[in-house]
Every structure is written in C-alpha cells, then in structure tokens.
Image (cartoon, rainbow, N blue to C red; front, side, top):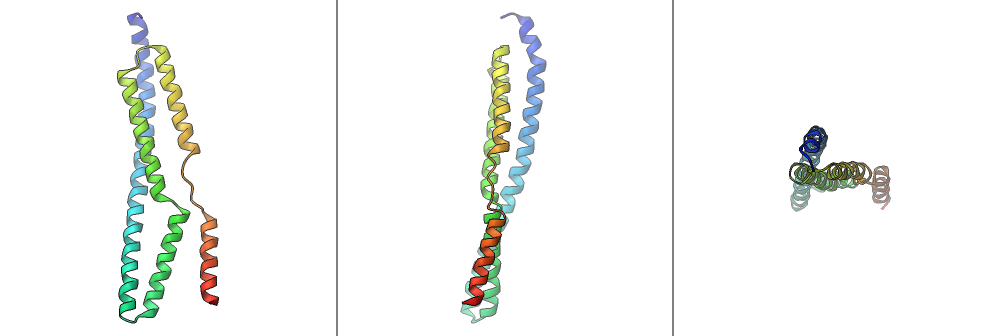
Length: 154
C-alpha cells in the first residue's frame, strides 16, 4: 500500500466519523430523556403504591381508590410507551457507534476496510430505524379502558 492511498482515505474517514458522531450524539440525547423519564415514572409509581397502603391503613378508601387509578394510568403509560426498553436500545446504539469510531481510528487503513466500515454504519442506522422497541400504543389504552369498565360494573 502506498502513502497516497492512506492520505486520500483520511478525508473520507473524517467525514464518516462526523456522521457517526452525530448519530451517537442523537442517540445519547434520546437515551438520556427516556432513561430519566422512565425512572421518574417508576419513582412516582412507588410513591403512589405507598400512598395506597397508607390510605388503606387510615381507612381512606376514596383516596386509596384514586391513587390506585393513578397507578393504573402509570402502568398503562409504561405499556404504551416502553421508555425503559427504548433507553436500553438507545444505549446499545451508542455503544455500537462508539465501537465503529474506534474501528475507524485504529483499524481502517485500506479503502476496502473503509468501505466495510461504511457498510457497517449503514446497517447500524437501518437497524436503529427498524428495531426501535414499540409500545402497545392505543391497544394498551383500550385494554386499560376495558379494565376500568369492568371494575365499574363489578
């Protein structure tokens, strides 16, 4: 391999690295948002559960019922929008992007290796677009409505 082909490869590597860095930054933002929102919902759910217990111990049935409905709503949200699963998915995309940057920095010396890295990044983007965990959406809402309707008639 001559020095000319290595020099010509560097601008391409930098351009691809820029695209990968942008991909990683985008998924870091998504991960952070989903991760924190998921934890907030978990903490709220735990506090509401404790509230139901305390309200029950104090013979406050109406308060316990309202808190129970709020818990059901939170569970429905988590079914409809799987924030924890999405956060984990985004984390995996970040790691794969960072691995690809390392490959570009330390292992790509030929045009063939560059093209392989480029193909790997295209596959990663396609996978990211096609494999994002999906919630049950309106199905979860309908199921929740049916559950509430059954409780009203019981």
